[in-house]
View 1 (tube, one colour):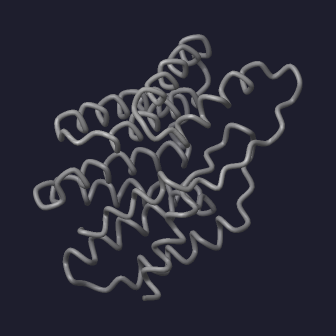
View 2 (view 1 turned 90 degrees about the vertical axis):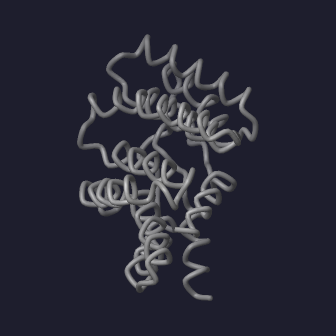
View 3 (view 1 turned 90 degrees about the horizontal axis):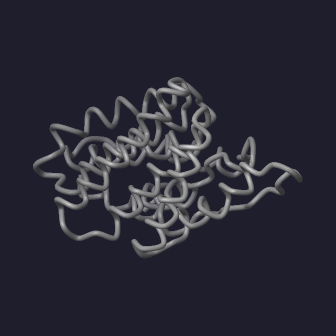
Length: 216
């Protein structure tokens, strides 16, 4: 699974747009700056500030899944700027805890399930040689479920392709399925339109990078 380091591509180029916020939508207006921070910040302090704000919104908006989702995503981002393996796991533990609240609200939401799979993939990335057996299968199964819940979700498909590619490389098997999924994810990203201003928008460059690798 040496190619799992490609997940970093997902964190570096977001292709984000910010749809206009309807006048009077205070919830959306409150969320957007913190979402942008978790997408673009490249150090832990601003990420932590954004996560803290998102957690406060989640406390106030107990029936909304998005604050929990982006809190979880923010902790995954923090993990990427940490070198200590124990601290990486602590961030992922916090990510899983926040995401569990989102999952309780929308258990069939493909985006939430895809992020769950991403967290498991990040567990593997901390030490692929020793953790692959424990987490790789779980990650693949979870991402496959996210795709099944919404076959048009490009993030779920891109993450599944990344996981499949890493496993194929590790075991010396064919990457054909992974590359086909990467190609499909890239095509879906090309026409993807977020359902609303708070819908997840990340992952396009990860799919494009993996597709490029498949062509080499």
